[in-house]
Length: 260
Image: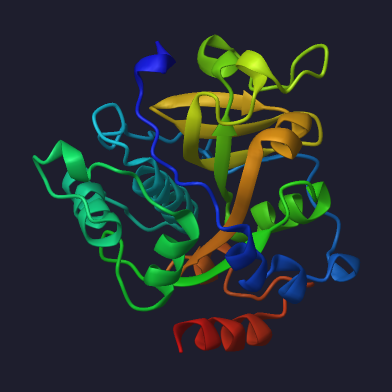
């Protein structure tokens, strides 16, 4: 049962998220060419990618496990091998979140933005550098779609309701309730990589499973959303060209300011 899986995402510091580089600062929706009606970055050459557990059934390591899933996705779509191991993810959890192997008292999860900024600041994840992380308003469907297309998926932070523990699709309550089992974070906080996009239904990878979610669910239960660009992967993902509508120079300058 999913209720036995580990979570581990700290609540977002929304003031710090708002102060971070925003997707709207570097993505001009008016200049974006027609996007595909749907995109599933987890399918490559007609075959589904494998997304390991990365110890998220044993540790509150979801922030780092989902980074591993993001790197797997961009790597496969860039034609670059990503042999990420449990040890790679656990090592990141130790360095970025203070976990001490074998000490359950230190298994306290992590803050997504703090982890992302540490990776921008020079830390490595599974040997790779994060070139950019941009924040997106989880209620802005147009920007989420554009960032997913540009970045090969999204990195999402959820306030999970208990009602989702046995749900086939993550959605809002039929009666619109957000109390009781439908209360945000009544189950806990979780971080996931979202790899699939369509107007009506989206998809993420977590705990080795595919989990569809609706735009309405994201608007209520997704607290933070980011686009990630891994340094040696994104140029290949983008075909070596800066997509129309993305101000790459401004993004580079803003990331330099974050590192500074």
